[in-house]
Amino acid sequence: MEAALGLESWLSAEIYRLLLVFCRVSMTMILMPGFGEIMIPGRIRMIAALVAAFCIAPLAGPAPSPPGAIAMAGAIGMEVVAGAFIGTLSRILLAAVQMAGQIIGQSIGLSNAFAFGMGADNAALLGSVLYAGLLVALFAMDGHHAGLRALADSYSLMPLGQPLQAAPAARALADATATSFRLAMQLSMPFLVLAVLFNAALAGINRAMPAMPVFLIGAPALLMVGLYLMRETMPALVTEMLGAYAEAFLLRR
Image 1 (cartoon, rainbow, N blue to C red):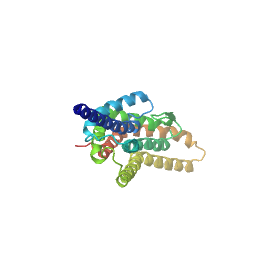
Image 2 (tube, rainbow, N blue to C red):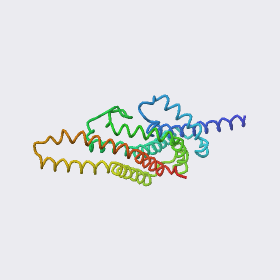
Image 3 (cartoon, one colour):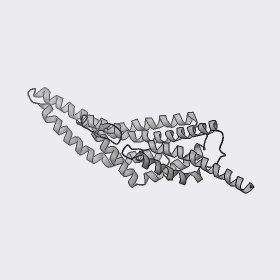
Image 4 (cartoon, rainbow, N blue to C red):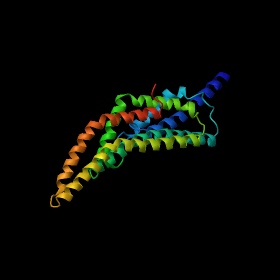
């Protein structure tokens, strides 16, 4: 009888630990780039989160005993908040690509070209292309494996069922936001310089020859030069974004 009670207690603790791990993993996958895109059905994401939770649960620390209903609801809420923090952190970093695509499109005259993006709404064409290419490169380099590894390592910083520390979390989000804006400006800086120089040249030509339709001539030329510059800078852009993603999640060895 005592053995049966011991087995029952152990099984309850393991199920409770799996539930908490699943809450954090599923919330992270809802927001994480690649796993959390709108094109992936919700059932597929939940199945992937359940499989990942089974693998991560033994690494999440000792199995706690199931508490009362109120304490259990609080622990589940804390795990959801922790998962949302990790997923939001990765989403903010890769949002730099979409911001850079928007700036590049405005610089070379493609700001009004929209396409179905990776999210729920339409996005700028260049931002969608850059974001899709970055996701392909991320998965090709097994970045999703490293992201799951970072999720498993998060239990050493955010213990299972414990509240998220507000000050370090706010600092990490602020640093990620600043890094995202900095990368967006750095990646789009060649196109901003091109747009300034090109428009200054068009202004000089228009000043010298007022009757010349400089816009009809300059807009296609700016677009062609911008697309050529984008082809040349695309590898460096993807490399910089992957490096920032790796540094944020401590993926470099």
